Length: 173
Image (cartoon, rainbow, N blue to C red; front, side, top):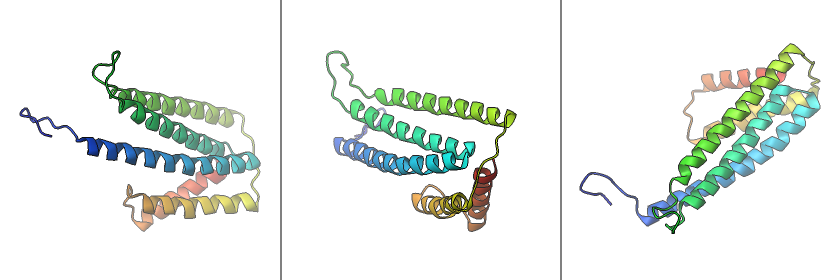
């Protein structure tokens, strides 16, 4: 619907499709990131690698972000009531703020843990199994995600450099 002043409003069908797509994407993100949290936590703890453990925490943050997004969209679609005569649509803005605070908090704690490890370094204990799993994660899983996400249009050379840098950081830091 387009109004005289040029503003537009989505139809109920468009709003429903948007909510459904957000929910589906959120659920896929939760399942994928849950697998990654478990996988990276096990490898990080086995190897004693703070970078892999922090990467697992990053995936945990992604899970929480997806949950907040799904819940926010569900609340935002509620019809107006006595307490909220204009509806609940602004909940999405608060959800965004909550996600930003979550990411900021995670980043600060990751920075703190990294600085502690730089001040008091410990050798990571990598064996052939952890190195093979890291290589698998970086070259197979990341390539699959990047190539099939639709968000990245990366040339093979840049993708190779990204994978090499990612593997180096996860293995030797």
